[in-house]
Length: 109
Length: 281
Image (cartoon, rainbow over the protein chains, first blue to last red):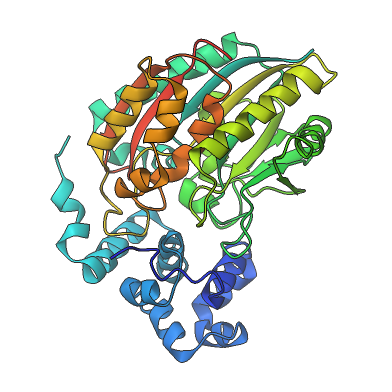
């Protein structure tokens, strides 16, 4: 699967992520009322669910640029490194399987 | 006339400030030793201005409106941008810009066929904040950020990036009326795949191949032909192609680069390394 095969430059998910990353107020709103915020950006129910659940395969299919996956995880699950790291590992494993497990690479090199 | 006095490239991994100690100690030591050497050489070159070249992590421009090339013209830059500050664990900083030279670069590049979009404000994330923290921690050398579209298709080709670098060099050395000493610092890479299945992996084989080419007498034309965007994507999509910034800086040099360090730093989520081009074009 090419991560950019379905890349859709016009996806509204790009707009909400781009603008929310830059605004403390919008970042707080993402946490407190994501659905309302997402609706105001015109996201569909399918897009809202994919973003809220950090469903990376679904987001890929919806055309989201993969570079925004980590920012989406951070916006949803927190900025703290330890918290972000453990959450990201779980999300990556859930989405991609064992290939995304950092334990696979532990000690290599 | 102004003179280019240094050309170099380094990683900008957020792990270098955000989670330094998580990486294995021998790798940390090797990379910080390389960074120290890069800093020593950069200071010895006594630059009056630094042109920084890096990708935009879709923070200054969004993926639906990403220019191939852009330059920040602010009188003063600040970082790290809100939203990445906690994650990078960096204190707020400011660094002076150089609006006259930045404007001159944008305007003089027009007749030379390169469109540098003008940014009144560039959001500094790891792309510039991390290297500046280590290389010029006093934040007192005027800095001009140059952004390259490294991973929003269709990116400029390696050859096009190199051409943009040549144009910048020609403007600095042949058209700008000032007499500044200008250093060029590219940042980004090496192999990584943020957001993808290899989010926590690096491609050591690719990294050593790439650095091997830079460190050898391989002609620049061959490097540009071999290091295609497809080849970089194979080593980690939407991350490895940050090396387009390195290829832009390579245009300021001739001959082989000194590879100052390399480590496959999985925990920092990218291959880590830095180079210095001793011979300038």
